[in-house]
Every structure is written in C-alpha cells, then in structure tokens.
Image (tube, rainbow, N blue to C red):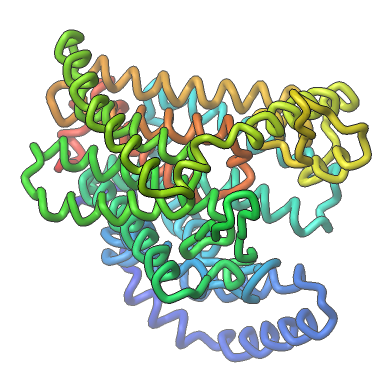
Length: 491
C-alpha cells in the first residue's frame, strides 16, 4: 500500500524514544500526578498524564503497520475493547481507546491529513467545514459552561472532535492507498462483535454497561432488559449496529455477494443485536437499509419499485408472525404511550429554546431545566424530561444557531453521497454512495426519535463510512488523475 504523505521511519524512532534520557523521570512524574489525581478526585489532572504517555507512543503510530492497520483494527476490535481500554473504569473515564488512538493518529499523520484536506472536492469541503463549524460552536458553549465541567468537555471531545478526526484520518487513509473494502469489512466485523457481545449478555445474564460508564437498562413498561452490548446505553449499541449493517451490505453489494457465508454471519449477529434492544427505530432503520441496498439502482426506477414491493411483503408477514409469537415484540410495536410522551418532550424543548435561543441552557442541562417547567401533556400522556431528538437537544442546550448548523451538516453529508452517486464510474462507486447514504438515513431517523448526537461512538462509525465516500468523490471530481498518481486502489 502506498503511504504518500504519511510519516515513515517509525520503528527506529520508537527505539530512540524508549532509550531517551527523559523517559524515566517523565514516567515517574506522570505516576506522581496520577496518584494525586486519584487521591484528590480531580480527574482532570490525568489529562497531562495521558498526553505524556501518548507522546511516547507517537513513533509507534508512524510505523507502516499502523498506517495499514490502525484504523481497520480500531473499527473492528474497538467494540470488544470499549469497556476495558479506559481509565478509570466506569463513568468519568479520562483515557479511552477512541481518545488516545484517534487523537494520537491525528498528530502522527498530520502532514497527510493536511495534504488530503487541500485536495478535497467541493462536496467534501462543504461537509468538513460544516462539521468543523459545529465543533467550534459547541466548543463555545462548553467554554460558557466552564472548562472545569468534565461531562461537557468529554461530550464535546467524543461527540464532535473524535468523529471529525476519524473522518479526516479515514479519508486520507483511503486517498493514499488504503482499501475501501478493508474499512467496510472492519465496520461490519466491529458490528458483528458488538452483536455477539449482546447475545452473550442475553444468554449468560451479565452486562458490561457499568464497565462503560452506564447502568443496566430495565424497561418497566415492557418488563425487559434493554441490552447495550459493550456500550453504556442501548441507544449507542443499536445505532452502531445499524451503521455496521449498512457497511456490511455495501461491502457485499460492491463485490457481487461473493462471500454469502461471511455476509450471513456478520448480518445475523448485527440484526440479533438490534433485536435485543427492542427499539422500534432500530427495526425500521435496518428494514430501510436492507430494502434500499437490494432495490435501489441507478436509472432503474421500475426495478427499484418491484424489488422493494417484493421484499416488503415477506417482511410484513414476518413482523405479523413475530407479533403473534413474541408478546414483548408485539407490546413494543403497539405501545404509543412513549411516542406521545416524546411529542410532549419536543414541545417542552421548544419552550426551553425560546428561553435561551442563542446560547442554550448548557450541555446536559436539558433534563434539569425541563424538570423545573410545568409538565406538558399530549392526549393524557405527560412529557419525559429527556429531549429524545438530536436537533431539540442541541437547540435547547447550545442554542438555535447550533441546531441549524447541525441540520446543515446532515444536509451536506447527504449532498456528498449524492455527488458520489452522480460521479460514479461503475457499480462499486454506486454501491458505496448508496450504502453511505442509507447509513446516514438510518442514523438520521434514529436521531429524530432519540438524542443520539451526545453519544460519540455511532457518529464515529458513521464518519468513517462517510470518509470513504468523500475520498472516492474527491478523486472522481478530478477525473481520477490524482487517484492514479497516488497509486490508490478501490478494492
């Protein structure tokens, strides 16, 4: 694989670093600061410790192995490592795998990232600029909250900074010789591992939610446990699975379904994981993604309609059968009470926005503010004090301008997929644009019914997927000349 623009010579530099005179005193000082942080409970003191530790491993991230495999391994093995590669464990972790690896790679690969950004297409630049602006707007809100607000800072880093860096890194990886299919398979494998963990939780009766900073979610209305796999909440779990499912089908379609056994195994684990969360939004999203990948073809609208109808009929019959044999499933589909409570929450969210339309009430302050307001009732159902909508959440907590930037970012992401769809030079390009667009639609639909934007992991998966479409679109926008010059491939 070509590695144009990415630093080299990492292995020798690593040996030099580990043999440097400053390693021992730096490690001793870092240990002392870490001890003070734990003893006093001031976890922010661990931040410089993490930076010192990360600097020692920067040369390792510049090796050829890291250039070829760091991002694929992060996407595939990340779900399994998510509860364990963190310090301290549980809620309030300072160092996590995502933060250390992605920020470290961004520093180590900065020259390549900068070069890739300069050669981006208009569609890629618009999306990148919109997400960067969103990140800056949220940073201003974090400053107003006070940088000492640990939860605000970590939400900003995980939900906005890390996804942006992941997008830039995967894009330069694909531009400079990285295999598009390798990233797609890594997304699929990561989703399958997450699905397998959820299945194991169901069978063995354990939960990793507390390890990841959450608690076991018990749904008293349906009398079920909402499994979260390796993550802290089930919303993150099933949204990651939706993006992984779209990536799996995209990989299969791009390769003419040549490995049906692998596709079936990956897809089954992902779908069972979605099933275990019992979210209707998850059921709808995977149906839309599945039908879309199978039916939609460029310039063949009649075929699209016929295939969609042909698939919709057995899906409808299957849903009816499951409702008959699974009382919990039937109860979840027929429960309109929580839908009405969410509508009431949206109305209350508008009231909160009106109270502070420019800067919002503060990150993670929605519930506290809503609890102080008079309740809203819709058809006899009281509102919940959670926004249950990403736009409502951002608008209430960071201001209406921030919500408008978030909406514009999603629009520019869809336009990026459309740009690749229009420029596509073959089946594989079309399937990449289609799969990425469907993943965006699934993520967007879930975000309209649940406040997903505050959870970083699904957005990171989505941004890695979108980066592939951006990289391919960048090259097609200049008729493939730079693609050939860099020696990159689309396999």
